Image 1 (cartoon, rainbow, N blue to C red):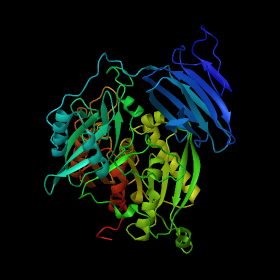
Image 2 (cartoon, rainbow, N blue to C red; image 1 turned 90 degrees about the horizontal axis):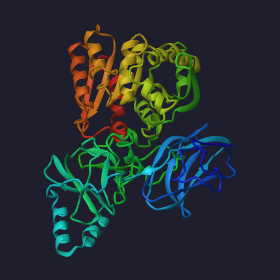
Image 3 (cartoon, one colour; image 1 turned 30 degrees about the vertical axis):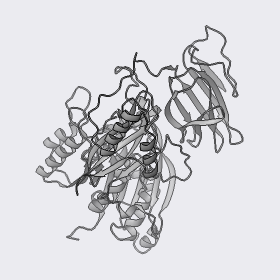
Image 4 (tube, one colour; image 1 turned 90 degrees about the vertical axis):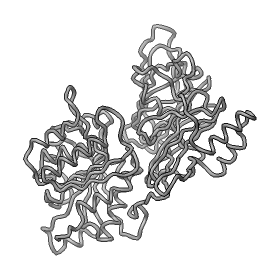
Length: 538
């Protein structure tokens, strides 16, 4: 074990795995490295003042360890479930907090805790200015509160019927009101229909907070509520991401976004609440069916060009060996998915493939799920990185052929991803159309441009390139608007219009939702059928 401290000029720092002298008054951050096994958890205790904002990083070798925060014998927050995660929290009470690291196997972890700072750096509470409540129920609650100074009856009603409130307007729209009880300073929505971290309004001087939206009746979204978010200066590097320190599921909403990983622990901070209005349809390909299940093989891939190693999961559909027994030269479609863990657990892509193949909506298709070595490499590799694109074409694709013993044709080799993953899919296909002929982009970040260049770099490149043999399925959410000079919705529309003008086959769809895996899981099958399914001429 090694323990490093930025400054030891004061009192000697001592740290045992049952307690530590390190506190928020200590100088500099705390850094701990230790080996661990599955026989007993490691514990690290620190002392914090009330209302301090704490950030840290946790990393393990095997990514099967978890990190949780405890106080007074009770779990406060599950900080990491995959052994590789940045975390944050607020110490709402003064006292000793204990980090607990558990492992399912022999492992080694690194834990770094930054020096805490005040969570609320404003001199007075800043309450979002509000208009008159548009919800009839909230108006009635406000009137009752003004007359009686009580919200008991209103909250008892909400507890019975659940949140958010849904009040029909007409056949096409509903008024949806998000609510929270108990916060002292502020409440924000992570995943709000505005695609921003919208503040809720306070009901009079009570501890109830609300905000209403007029939404299409086919809206489908996931969200979290964040009470008492740290109030940091706008220039602070944590100003926007500090919402993650308190964001959690809506306690009165029974609908939770399912994560397709039975081994992954969760708590209210790691769960997402969901909203589906009456006309929102769930994809039939998400549910467990009687389809034969494909085989998943987990392995690693080293790239000489990128000089890094990443986890790779290969999906082989059921019955593939039988199909090739009498025709060894047969080729199969290949679908490559970026953000591989998310496309297995937040989106049940293997299940979707099983169902589509069984129903003959698409032919038997191999799939490869590519993990990111880290969050930092994701941000450097996926946004139109020419070395990453070359590694996919010249290293990964031959490696897949070697691993599977199957050959693939560019016209049925698909790149797929969301956000930066959608951008990477398109950039790579344009760089190597002789390898990748299909692009499935979900809310692609086509606003992106290199530093000091105007937005929509890829769209400008395509405009001046000859038309290439690539087909597209692109979608974006109607709520993905209003941020930046060019937003996701606008840039996706621009790209689709240009592709049509250039003569590409490009299917484009919009949905009533935002930048959200809850939506991406719901329309992934549409993209796969569009690109891999039988065409009318077949």
